[in-house]
Length: 241
Image: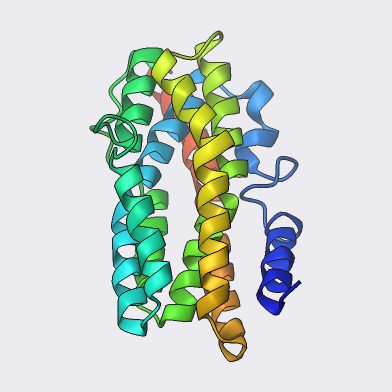
């Protein structure tokens, strides 16, 4: 096992031991799922849908950083991921459209017009700030996004399944099946392998900084989404009082 493999294994352990975002026993939305109101979960899912919509822009920015650093293998891998996200293997239908249109069909609610809340804006701003850092920090952040994706999508699917109360629409089921079983495992593995060829051990500390910065931003996002969803209850109570 090389040194980068050891680092990535440690970070994968850290993301559930030290952080709450993708920990089923600690994520504030998941631990309150059984008692949550439908409109609260709709609020959370609509806000979540903005995150995958913006990921392509972050990947494109990271690719430019990789090219500037001379990390050509990493840049090529990101280009392949971006093409896939935009529909290269799904008949030109982007992964975001698969998710959003599936949600619109399943929930009978508009998804694509959703505007980011303060919590979501804070997350996006944090990611934009990280993407302006050096290559090692940026790719610590990108690796965090890839490493957390399966756990995150599993939780999101739990929320949606509870909302719909039955079988998911075909395009939404396809979205989750392919992401959980093929696309995301492949993306994580290929990014990890190409990074191992490029990043120097002297830059591991910066890589960790980027990884942890994303985890902290995601922890705050889920915590604030739970608070915003609870605020919807208080608003509703005032309206009907």
